[in-house]
Length: 312
Image 1 (cartoon, rainbow, N blue to C red):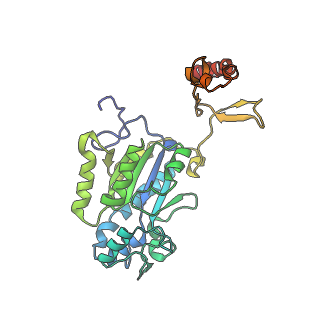
Image 2: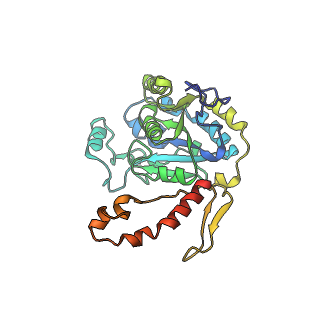
Image 3: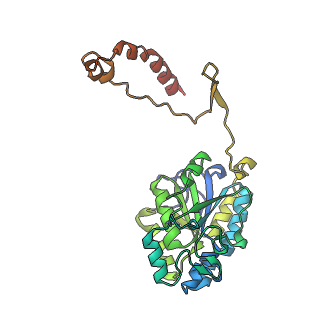
Protein backbone atom coordinates (compact mmCIF):
# COMPACT_ATOMS: atom_id res chain seq x y z
CA UNK A 1 0.00 0.00 0.00
CA UNK A 2 0.97 3.69 -0.24
CA UNK A 3 1.70 3.84 3.51
CA UNK A 4 4.61 1.36 3.21
CA UNK A 5 8.00 2.91 3.99
CA UNK A 6 10.15 3.41 0.91
CA UNK A 7 13.84 2.62 0.47
CA UNK A 8 16.23 3.09 -2.43
CA UNK A 9 15.57 -0.43 -3.70
CA UNK A 10 14.63 -0.51 -7.38
CA UNK A 11 12.07 -3.29 -7.10
CA UNK A 12 8.60 -3.99 -8.41
CA UNK A 13 5.72 -3.57 -7.78
CA UNK A 14 6.75 -1.71 -4.60
CA UNK A 15 9.95 -0.58 -2.96
CA UNK A 16 11.13 -3.55 -0.92
CA UNK A 17 10.92 -4.17 1.99
CA UNK A 18 7.43 -2.93 2.75
CA UNK A 19 7.73 -3.38 6.52
CA UNK A 20 10.47 -0.90 7.43
CA UNK A 21 14.11 -0.13 6.78
CA UNK A 22 16.24 -3.09 5.74
CA UNK A 23 18.57 -4.46 8.43
CA UNK A 24 21.17 -7.16 7.89
CA UNK A 25 20.30 -8.89 11.17
CA UNK A 26 16.70 -9.54 10.12
CA UNK A 27 17.39 -10.55 6.51
CA UNK A 28 18.43 -13.83 4.89
CA UNK A 29 19.49 -14.82 1.39
CA UNK A 30 18.11 -18.23 0.42
CA UNK A 31 19.77 -19.89 -2.57
CA UNK A 32 17.54 -22.74 -3.68
CA UNK A 33 18.74 -26.02 -5.17
CA UNK A 34 21.81 -24.91 -7.12
CA UNK A 35 22.80 -28.56 -7.38
CA UNK A 36 24.57 -30.62 -10.03
CA UNK A 37 21.32 -32.53 -10.59
CA UNK A 38 19.54 -29.31 -11.57
CA UNK A 39 22.21 -27.35 -13.43
CA UNK A 40 25.16 -29.68 -14.07
CA UNK A 41 26.08 -32.00 -16.91
CA UNK A 42 24.74 -35.51 -16.48
CA UNK A 43 22.32 -34.46 -13.74
CA UNK A 44 18.55 -34.84 -13.42
CA UNK A 45 17.63 -31.83 -15.58
CA UNK A 46 20.23 -32.73 -18.20
CA UNK A 47 18.86 -36.29 -18.36
CA UNK A 48 15.40 -34.88 -19.03
CA UNK A 49 16.81 -33.08 -22.08
CA UNK A 50 16.43 -29.45 -21.03
CA UNK A 51 18.77 -26.62 -22.01
CA UNK A 52 21.32 -26.31 -19.21
CA UNK A 53 22.26 -22.79 -20.25
CA UNK A 54 18.90 -21.57 -18.95
CA UNK A 55 19.31 -23.01 -15.45
CA UNK A 56 22.98 -22.01 -15.27
CA UNK A 57 22.22 -18.36 -16.11
CA UNK A 58 21.72 -17.36 -12.43
CA UNK A 59 25.18 -18.56 -11.37
CA UNK A 60 27.09 -15.31 -11.99
CA UNK A 61 24.37 -13.02 -10.53
CA UNK A 62 24.18 -15.27 -7.46
CA UNK A 63 27.97 -15.26 -7.08
CA UNK A 64 27.95 -11.46 -7.03
CA UNK A 65 25.05 -11.29 -4.60
CA UNK A 66 26.55 -13.97 -2.38
CA UNK A 67 29.70 -11.88 -1.99
CA UNK A 68 27.63 -8.78 -1.15
CA UNK A 69 25.46 -10.66 1.34
CA UNK A 70 28.47 -12.10 3.13
CA UNK A 71 30.12 -8.68 3.34
CA UNK A 72 26.93 -7.13 4.72
CA UNK A 73 26.42 -9.86 7.33
CA UNK A 74 23.23 -11.15 5.74
CA UNK A 75 22.45 -14.71 6.82
CA UNK A 76 22.97 -17.08 3.88
CA UNK A 77 21.07 -20.35 3.57
CA UNK A 78 21.48 -22.96 0.83
CA UNK A 79 18.97 -25.70 0.04
CA UNK A 80 19.24 -29.12 -1.60
CA UNK A 81 16.41 -31.28 -2.86
CA UNK A 82 16.95 -35.00 -2.56
CA UNK A 83 15.69 -38.22 -1.06
CA UNK A 84 17.03 -40.75 1.41
CA UNK A 85 19.06 -43.58 -0.13
CA UNK A 86 16.23 -45.93 0.90
CA UNK A 87 13.77 -43.72 -1.03
CA UNK A 88 11.40 -44.15 1.92
CA UNK A 89 10.53 -40.44 1.64
CA UNK A 90 9.83 -40.54 -2.12
CA UNK A 91 6.09 -40.34 -2.92
CA UNK A 92 4.95 -42.82 -5.55
CA UNK A 93 3.53 -40.11 -7.82
CA UNK A 94 6.88 -38.29 -7.85
CA UNK A 95 8.75 -41.51 -8.63
CA UNK A 96 6.30 -42.37 -11.41
CA UNK A 97 6.52 -38.90 -12.97
CA UNK A 98 10.34 -38.89 -12.99
CA UNK A 99 10.40 -42.39 -14.50
CA UNK A 100 7.94 -41.39 -17.23
CA UNK A 101 10.35 -38.72 -18.50
CA UNK A 102 13.42 -40.92 -18.43
CA UNK A 103 15.09 -39.74 -15.21
CA UNK A 104 13.65 -41.89 -12.43
CA UNK A 105 14.62 -40.63 -8.99
CA UNK A 106 16.95 -43.12 -7.33
CA UNK A 107 18.09 -44.68 -10.60
CA UNK A 108 21.73 -44.67 -11.68
CA UNK A 109 22.91 -41.83 -13.90
CA UNK A 110 26.07 -40.02 -14.90
CA UNK A 111 26.09 -38.22 -11.53
CA UNK A 112 25.18 -41.21 -9.38
CA UNK A 113 21.66 -42.01 -8.21
CA UNK A 114 19.28 -39.27 -9.35
CA UNK A 115 18.20 -36.79 -6.64
CA UNK A 116 19.50 -39.05 -3.90
CA UNK A 117 21.26 -37.72 -0.83
CA UNK A 118 24.99 -38.33 -0.73
CA UNK A 119 25.36 -38.75 -4.50
CA UNK A 120 27.49 -36.42 -6.71
CA UNK A 121 24.40 -35.01 -8.43
CA UNK A 122 22.83 -34.05 -5.12
CA UNK A 123 25.78 -31.81 -4.17
CA UNK A 124 25.75 -28.04 -4.58
CA UNK A 125 27.73 -26.74 -7.54
CA UNK A 126 31.28 -25.57 -6.68
CA UNK A 127 30.64 -22.08 -8.06
CA UNK A 128 28.25 -21.44 -5.16
CA UNK A 129 29.85 -23.49 -2.40
CA UNK A 130 28.64 -22.65 1.12
CA UNK A 131 30.99 -21.40 3.79
CA UNK A 132 31.32 -23.68 6.83
CA UNK A 133 29.19 -21.21 8.82
CA UNK A 134 26.32 -21.20 6.31
CA UNK A 135 23.37 -23.48 6.91
CA UNK A 136 22.17 -26.02 4.35
CA UNK A 137 18.54 -27.13 4.34
CA UNK A 138 17.95 -30.62 2.93
CA UNK A 139 14.41 -30.96 1.67
CA UNK A 140 12.45 -33.88 0.24
CA UNK A 141 9.98 -31.77 -1.75
CA UNK A 142 9.63 -28.65 -3.82
CA UNK A 143 9.16 -26.08 -1.07
CA UNK A 144 11.94 -25.30 1.38
CA UNK A 145 9.63 -25.22 4.41
CA UNK A 146 7.76 -28.52 4.06
CA UNK A 147 9.51 -31.34 5.91
CA UNK A 148 12.38 -29.12 7.11
CA UNK A 149 13.32 -26.90 10.07
CA UNK A 150 13.78 -23.76 7.93
CA UNK A 151 11.02 -21.76 9.65
CA UNK A 152 12.41 -22.65 13.08
CA UNK A 153 15.92 -21.64 11.96
CA UNK A 154 14.78 -18.29 10.54
CA UNK A 155 12.66 -17.32 13.54
CA UNK A 156 15.37 -18.37 16.00
CA UNK A 157 17.81 -16.08 14.17
CA UNK A 158 15.36 -13.16 14.08
CA UNK A 159 14.91 -13.20 10.28
CA UNK A 160 11.83 -11.48 8.84
CA UNK A 161 12.88 -10.64 5.26
CA UNK A 162 13.93 -13.15 2.61
CA UNK A 163 15.87 -12.58 -0.60
CA UNK A 164 15.17 -15.64 -2.74
CA UNK A 165 17.00 -17.03 -5.76
CA UNK A 166 17.90 -20.34 -7.34
CA UNK A 167 16.14 -22.89 -9.51
CA UNK A 168 13.63 -23.38 -10.76
CA UNK A 169 11.63 -20.16 -10.60
CA UNK A 170 8.32 -21.79 -11.44
CA UNK A 171 8.65 -24.78 -9.11
CA UNK A 172 10.86 -24.83 -6.00
CA UNK A 173 11.53 -21.08 -5.88
CA UNK A 174 7.88 -20.11 -6.32
CA UNK A 175 6.64 -22.74 -3.89
CA UNK A 176 9.04 -21.45 -1.25
CA UNK A 177 8.14 -17.79 -1.84
CA UNK A 178 4.40 -18.49 -1.63
CA UNK A 179 4.79 -20.49 1.57
CA UNK A 180 7.03 -17.83 3.11
CA UNK A 181 4.55 -15.09 2.25
CA UNK A 182 1.73 -17.00 3.94
CA UNK A 183 3.95 -17.41 7.01
CA UNK A 184 4.50 -13.65 7.28
CA UNK A 185 7.97 -13.26 5.72
CA UNK A 186 8.57 -10.23 3.51
CA UNK A 187 9.98 -11.73 0.30
CA UNK A 188 12.01 -10.51 -2.65
CA UNK A 189 12.52 -12.69 -5.75
CA UNK A 190 15.66 -12.20 -7.84
CA UNK A 191 14.74 -11.83 -11.51
CA UNK A 192 18.23 -12.71 -12.78
CA UNK A 193 19.22 -14.85 -9.79
CA UNK A 194 16.58 -17.45 -10.58
CA UNK A 195 15.70 -19.44 -13.70
CA UNK A 196 13.46 -22.15 -15.12
CA UNK A 197 13.89 -24.90 -17.68
CA UNK A 198 11.65 -22.85 -19.97
CA UNK A 199 12.13 -19.09 -20.41
CA UNK A 200 8.38 -18.45 -20.69
CA UNK A 201 7.79 -20.26 -17.39
CA UNK A 202 10.39 -18.03 -15.71
CA UNK A 203 8.77 -14.88 -17.12
CA UNK A 204 5.30 -16.05 -16.06
CA UNK A 205 6.52 -16.80 -12.52
CA UNK A 206 8.01 -13.31 -12.22
CA UNK A 207 4.82 -11.75 -13.59
CA UNK A 208 2.67 -13.60 -11.05
CA UNK A 209 4.49 -11.90 -8.19
CA UNK A 210 3.70 -8.47 -9.64
CA UNK A 211 -0.06 -8.95 -9.53
CA UNK A 212 -2.38 -7.57 -6.82
CA UNK A 213 0.23 -5.09 -5.64
CA UNK A 214 2.83 -7.80 -5.01
CA UNK A 215 0.74 -10.81 -4.04
CA UNK A 216 3.77 -12.82 -2.87
CA UNK A 217 6.28 -9.97 -2.38
CA UNK A 218 8.44 -8.02 -4.81
CA UNK A 219 11.02 -8.68 -7.53
CA UNK A 220 14.37 -7.05 -8.32
CA UNK A 221 17.65 -7.66 -10.09
CA UNK A 222 20.67 -8.93 -8.21
CA UNK A 223 22.55 -5.70 -8.98
CA UNK A 224 19.81 -3.63 -7.33
CA UNK A 225 20.02 -5.82 -4.23
CA UNK A 226 23.84 -5.59 -4.18
CA UNK A 227 23.57 -1.81 -4.31
CA UNK A 228 21.14 -1.78 -1.38
CA UNK A 229 23.29 -4.14 0.69
CA UNK A 230 26.39 -2.03 0.06
CA UNK A 231 24.71 0.87 1.85
CA UNK A 232 23.80 -1.10 4.97
CA UNK A 233 25.69 -0.68 8.24
CA UNK A 234 27.93 -3.69 8.68
CA UNK A 235 26.17 -6.33 10.77
CA UNK A 236 27.77 -7.80 13.86
CA UNK A 237 30.02 -10.69 12.87
CA UNK A 238 27.91 -13.02 15.02
CA UNK A 239 25.07 -12.60 12.57
CA UNK A 240 27.21 -14.15 9.84
CA UNK A 241 27.73 -17.19 12.05
CA UNK A 242 24.02 -17.61 12.62
CA UNK A 243 23.72 -15.84 15.97
CA UNK A 244 21.77 -12.70 16.75
CA UNK A 245 23.42 -10.06 18.98
CA UNK A 246 21.73 -10.31 22.38
CA UNK A 247 19.90 -7.24 23.72
CA UNK A 248 20.24 -6.19 27.36
CA UNK A 249 18.79 -9.08 29.40
CA UNK A 250 16.12 -9.08 32.09
CA UNK A 251 16.33 -11.51 35.00
CA UNK A 252 14.10 -12.93 37.73
CA UNK A 253 16.75 -13.93 40.33
CA UNK A 254 14.28 -15.80 42.56
CA UNK A 255 13.08 -18.16 39.83
CA UNK A 256 13.63 -21.86 40.60
CA UNK A 257 15.61 -23.99 40.01
CA UNK A 258 17.73 -21.29 38.31
CA UNK A 259 17.29 -17.55 37.66
CA UNK A 260 15.15 -16.90 34.58
CA UNK A 261 16.74 -14.56 32.04
CA UNK A 262 15.48 -13.32 28.67
CA UNK A 263 16.49 -10.63 26.14
CA UNK A 264 14.59 -7.39 26.63
CA UNK A 265 11.72 -7.10 24.15
CA UNK A 266 11.73 -10.82 23.31
CA UNK A 267 9.35 -12.29 25.89
CA UNK A 268 5.64 -12.94 25.62
CA UNK A 269 3.24 -13.25 28.57
CA UNK A 270 0.67 -16.01 28.11
CA UNK A 271 -2.36 -15.82 30.43
CA UNK A 272 -4.26 -19.12 30.34
CA UNK A 273 -7.95 -19.63 31.17
CA UNK A 274 -8.55 -16.88 33.74
CA UNK A 275 -12.27 -17.33 33.06
CA UNK A 276 -15.31 -16.85 35.24
CA UNK A 277 -16.35 -20.42 34.44
CA UNK A 278 -13.28 -21.61 36.34
CA UNK A 279 -13.06 -18.95 39.05
CA UNK A 280 -16.58 -18.04 40.21
CA UNK A 281 -19.30 -19.82 42.14
CA UNK A 282 -21.92 -21.36 39.88
CA UNK A 283 -19.42 -21.73 37.09
CA UNK A 284 -18.16 -24.84 35.35
CA UNK A 285 -15.31 -25.46 37.82
CA UNK A 286 -17.61 -25.04 40.82
CA UNK A 287 -20.10 -27.51 39.33
CA UNK A 288 -17.29 -30.08 39.11
CA UNK A 289 -16.51 -29.62 42.79
CA UNK A 290 -13.23 -27.79 42.23
CA UNK A 291 -11.92 -25.67 45.10
CA UNK A 292 -12.22 -22.35 43.33
CA UNK A 293 -10.76 -20.52 46.32
CA UNK A 294 -7.37 -22.07 45.53
CA UNK A 295 -7.62 -20.90 41.93
CA UNK A 296 -8.63 -17.38 42.92
CA UNK A 297 -5.62 -17.20 45.22
CA UNK A 298 -3.47 -16.82 42.12
CA UNK A 299 -5.34 -13.77 40.85
CA UNK A 300 -3.34 -11.06 42.65
CA UNK A 301 -0.02 -12.45 41.41
CA UNK A 302 -1.32 -12.84 37.87
CA UNK A 303 -2.68 -9.29 37.90
CA UNK A 304 0.67 -7.95 39.10
CA UNK A 305 2.57 -9.77 36.33
CA UNK A 306 0.05 -8.53 33.75
CA UNK A 307 0.44 -4.94 34.91
CA UNK A 308 4.21 -5.27 34.78
CA UNK A 309 4.12 -6.73 31.29
CA UNK A 310 1.91 -3.91 30.01
CA UNK A 311 4.24 -1.36 31.53
CA UNK A 312 7.14 -2.91 29.59
